[in-house]
Image (cartoon, rainbow, N blue to C red; front, side, top):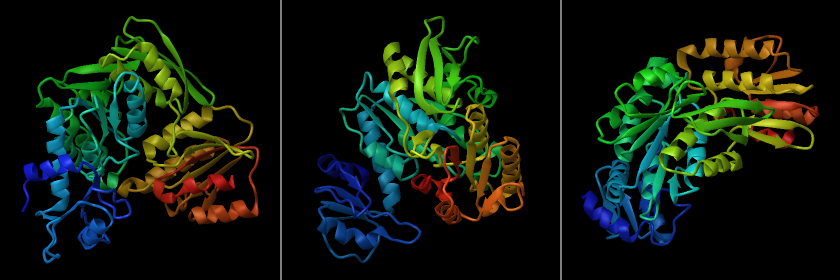
Length: 431
């Protein structure tokens, strides 16, 4: 069995990691991970044939090949190698987690820091037990600061990831109702997200960026050094407020006692003000010029089906179809209600992984949607069965597509939001 220091010496000469035989750069190291329906060990030979210099495996009986590195557990080895690499570089890291907004906050924070530093940050939403190690292993000595997103759907996961990341600064965006099937309750969500704070408590010199208007987070943060952000007039380190939202968010922000900075963003949703203030707080702490922070917030354009506004020529679409839970759904509908338009429509997908609270959550969402007075509301997914009979129901996205091919929709402002698994993000070409 190969130990981590020995493997790290190989990694230093072959610093590209892959876990997918469809992407095998010359000289890279293949990690043979296991999935629900595959065993990466079975593809180790193919990875070597396609250009990988080595393959890390944990299956006995494989061909005798000096390029095969045998370990007890490939996933654990990947994580330990990433943790070791992170500690060799000692690059300052900001770790971000939370129920909603963590990816947008990560993107905004990286954009702000990039105005001054060479920044390494999580790509897409690669924020789990595999994505986080791969993110850290892609970090180089040239990177001056890193922003690492961590997600979780069961207790203990943030604790595990925090040990690997060994962040210097932490940021929890919020605590909301999501993945209840795995966490059991909102208290379970809070405990798991709070594992980031727990880790930083035992690390000397650590700092958190605290959304001080959130009483749950404020209580959880007791005893930690904090850089506070929130609504104006409360004496926080960074303060701000929404100045417009029709449909793009406009806001103003400032350091405590400093000059105000006006920002016109490309973000949909007043709820993104908190995410922008979080990024401003991180930027100020790291010494980014305030005008550069403002420019970074203004220039950032969202992607990946998160708070995107898309004009199709027939309709205006607000696409927020990457993820959904009761907290983010309510915020999206509240914001949609504030946007003036004579012909509004909503296509809402069911929320996944809510366990025992699913029925009540979908009933509340349907009631809120029904009361908004939109010209049309389409509910997609079996979880909406029996909710708001006056609204149009579809079993899945394929039924919606069929309806759109039979009868086109034109001249409307349409909110599209649902869990990623409902695949509502496939609808825009038909709208």
